[in-house]
View 1 (cartoon, one colour):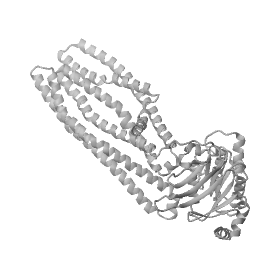
View 2 (cartoon, helix red, strand yellow; view 1 turned 180 degrees about the vertical axis):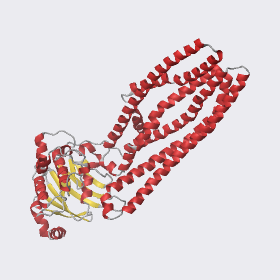
View 3 (cartoon, one colour; view 1 turned 45 degrees about the vertical axis):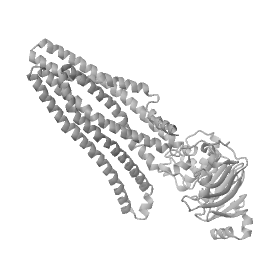
View 4 (cartoon, one colour; view 1 turned 90 degrees about the vertical axis):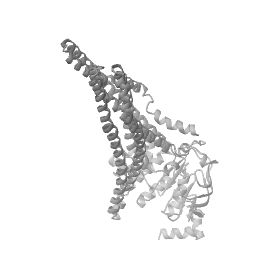
Length: 573
């Protein structure tokens, strides 16, 4: 189990390099070829000082020619390096985000409905930016600074072993400060990520509930909620930025000054003694920047990289949690029945929404679920869709326990037309087909049966629906949802108040068309108790307080004059 989890996390790190290793290796090679530029620049500076002291114009000319050639070559290497790094990061981030969304899409409904979508939005926006900057880009920079540090030490040792040892001694203080203070950076980076996740989640809720906020005149309260979450996330960012600045002040300002001043004094002493030249002192003084910078930056970058690595692991963990588990596949057909046996379920412990439900839904028959609001009708349909698996009792699909059925194959058997419709900001046709290809005659038939023919004829199938269908009326959105499910043609069709937002005439026509379809098992939650429609159902199941209180044919239930009789007459006045 632990190995499986580790492999899952590793897959996110490996996503950066999948079919991208060639670009990564090219970038590494160019980073290695590019690092000598800084060291050669210091050497040239010292060489010029020594040439000036000697007064040899020929040597000065040679240094000038070498400098021009070297600068040209290093510019070309540098340009190629940045190009290779950019190409690697470009592809790495695409693959990383694609893997995350792929794993997210493989969750089942049960897993996803228990989670906060704001977490995913934050992880795939804010955190991806941090991963790009702190994990990918800084990895190349770390290599560059490590190479510069090693090269600088080698060059210093070549000129003066004694002064090199003095430099290492003086560099110990900033190195220690960077290591210890850098550890705190990773923790503060994680705090920022967590608080940003809460901010995005709260913002999403406020925007989704905009009309409710306005209608209840709760703008001031909403502004206060936004202000509070915004303040908390900025406080975390402030703490991170303050620590980053403090670390820079200690390691780059205080310690760097001590190092530079110490090297200058030690070099001056050795130059006065005649052990080294003035040019060598200048080379050391210039090279000390390439000692202090890696000493300061590499621990910081390593801390930032660890923080970004923690964000990658966080994304892996949240997409892995409750990930869709493999189960027994069922054929895309219902041969016998869906059996609900003694099912009890509640969203909260000791607060059941459904109690001891026993229903047999036989293949090819039509069932109506009726009852007052809160009686458990929608919850029962959600259970049939596999949205929750912590019910007691059993639900069998042709003898297979629903908990043990592979979710993908279940969705080939059952589809749901919900009262809450979601549409993509795309064309009407692509929303109906869900971006897949279907024969034109099947698409036209679904459009006709859902009552969309007039809309498509008027606006065209390429009409953009707008964000979540904002370009369509509520009834038009619902008809698109109905057409979507009819086109899929699953053998079991669940309708949860699917015609609630339609006018009575349209609702009747669509429901009548669905009931007249051959070969489908239909379970319809409805509050429209129309005589002509109700008498078409093979059985009407009446729920009250989470239990089945009555069941039977339309006229049979009326003759009993029990709960359905009262509900029917209250509904129809």
